[in-house]
Amino acid sequence: METSVSKPQRLMSIDALRGFDMLLIIFADKFFINLGRAADTPFTNFMATQFDHPEWYGFHIYDIIMPLFLFVVGAVIPFSLTRRLREKPDKALLYRHLLKRVLVLFILGAICQGHLLALDINKLHFYSNTLQAIAVGYLFASIAFIHLSKKGRYILFACLLVVYALLLTVTNVPGLGPSELLPDKSFALYLDHLILGRFDDGTQYSWILTGLGFTATVLSGVFAGELIRSSLAREKIALYLFVIGVISLTLGLIWGIWHPIIKKLWTSSFILFINGLCFILLAGFYWIIDVKGYRKWAFPLKVIGMNAISIYVATHVISFSKISNYVLFGFEQYTGAYYDVLTTIGGFSIMYLILWYMYKNNTFIKV
Image (cartoon, rainbow, N blue to C red; front, side):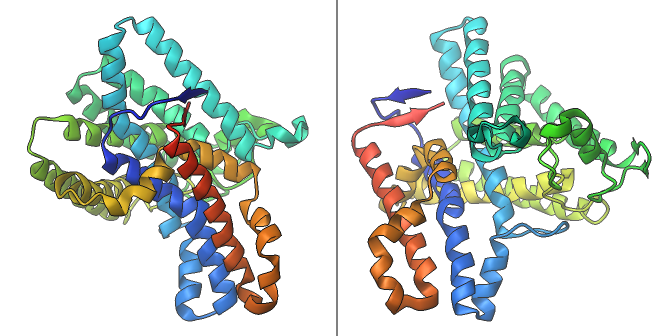
């Protein structure tokens, strides 16, 4: 990992959107779950439900976090790889950088959810985390950006969706018959169990075959990044991002009638649906921040977004809410059932102060 000592010139809207995504996972999920337990009202219980994944079919707010992370990674690729190719045209050096980044992301993912720090091989989950999904999607989307034309990338995106959908529906699962979009009959999950063996995470989430979907999601971010880098007027870029988002979301819902939206399998209909939401969110952030120039409100999100991977890993290793408990424990007698809500806010405050300090000192940890 590298430590940068200067702030790169970049679109604030992308950093703010990344920060918004991180805010959902490092604060909003725990806040609404704890608030639901404490208040126990229809609204708070609904919000708590929205910050957990659905059992199988459908969509909750929580489902956007991982795809949005991949999407934003893709949106940056046209900026970062174009700059690297211009400064150092040697593709061998570029591939070394890509592979190094993939390796670091896999290791960090193993630390976050793969129990690497347990130092027990029997507990190790080799492939089970968002950072590892990013690694896969980033690698293949980057290769596509380097070697394919823009039209070629569009064709690749469509092929990924179709091929993945076919593999989930026309293949056979040994001993079970035709693959179905069910947790106990899916070819994707069968492949995970077969290849990962004892290192499989044992959940209903698919990973290996779903790399096709991860790549498609990152590629959709690449398309957004290319649009932003284009010579079009910023107002038109924001409009096109929004229109593409609406079209993609609509296509995902229509395809979902026959090929259900399932986040745990990352189905092709889910990819189109969630990509639509990502495009719409980016359109909103881009229009407000970079077109209209309303930037001050987004500064806290930028602070979080500039060190997104750092805080993501830190929250999987350190319990900031427990740390806040050492400071706030005296309030428990007054807050009662809301005490966990208070320590969640306190823990997030500690995280934000650390990120703010890093930002003010121009310290940005990059993979």
